[in-house]
Image 1 (cartoon, rainbow, N blue to C red):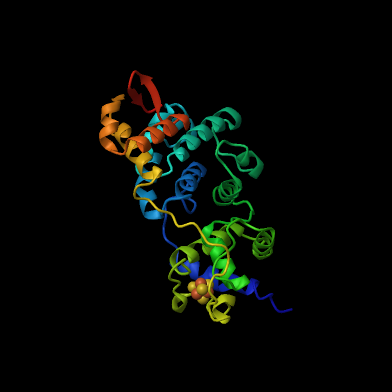
Image 2: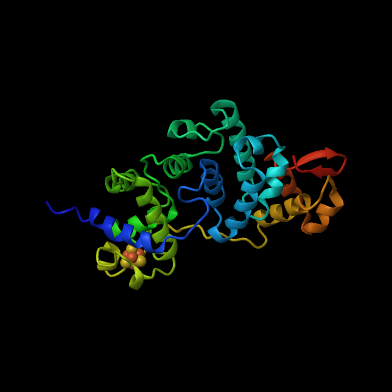
Length: 291
Ligand code: SF4
């Protein structure tokens, strides 16, 4: 029997991965489950190049969940540096505490145990179970979704949210043997070749099987997608305020925060939201600190 068109992707993608995979510290047998877990938190919204140095420092300082859980959450926020979306640092700290309490300090392998940890959603639970423990799960990150949308579904981009049909396609393609390697190979193909804005089809191992290419690259015609802006946004303002606290050895007076962002209404709103999120604490009259 001939292999299904989609399973014909396996050989070329896995061979390409074998030749082109980046040597990243959270991949392969050297990586501990904790290293994988930390990387998954950091990579959720930050590119590999920016994650690499912070991941290395983090693992050197906190080589186990117990080591991180033993420190105040503010130290996690400080060490998160400029990775962005710093609530991830608080969630990782909370997850480390729960791993110590519920799992004897070992990152669990079962999807349901991972999903029950603070700050871990479907994607992260599947990724940790898969990449840290070799379990067979569908791992649908942005890169995997884009590669499958193009190669199998013949569209430029997947829908905004994961659909049932998409999950079924991914499950059908997931090999019985060594599913994690297949997932990471698709991720790498999306990161290095089948990129969002500039796919390098000439260098693609599945160019002759790609449905989007065969259809003549029809343009995306779904709902408009959010374009992430930065300058002048609350995200930028929060980042500036948090940087002042991160770079200070102790509590800081409000006047130093005032100097970090001139637009008063936005500054006040963002400081209040940082306090509400638990990233900053109000420790005295007009004085703030990391938790
Ligand atoms: S042929 Fe081009 S669009 Fe299709 S999977 Fe490869 S890089 Fe992506």
